[in-house]
Length: 166
Image (cartoon, rainbow, N blue to C red; front, side, top):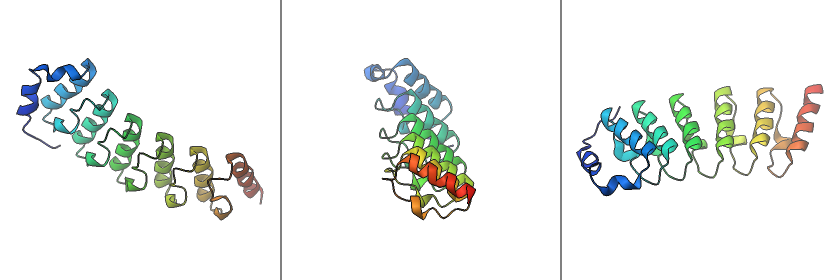
């Protein structure tokens, strides 16, 4: 847990500065102060409540929140990055705002399953295409024929089913 001198934020809470935050955001800031967190990492009106909570949770777990502490990441994207960090994975492969939170989740599952996620960690793939490629890798199939984001999901699914029968 990172500790910081938050006297500046504590002082600001007694000024009009608080007016830029809603009640939920202020609860996260006050809770962080009470827990001795570096609230400067998330006391930003550009963050919504969920984003602030994800950053606060990461600080509590002593994670490198700098990887995801950006308004460019939604709260759900932050959740998947935080989860990957908690599990010890190299999240740099998907910690990119270009990925949807669903895509991030599919890449994280690939890391958890031990497959080569570099084969599908591309924001041009739909998340369901990523599922097909990941499942094919888990099954040990040669995925070269479907490694193209322009191949429709339905075609990938037919290919996958044909491999199961081969």
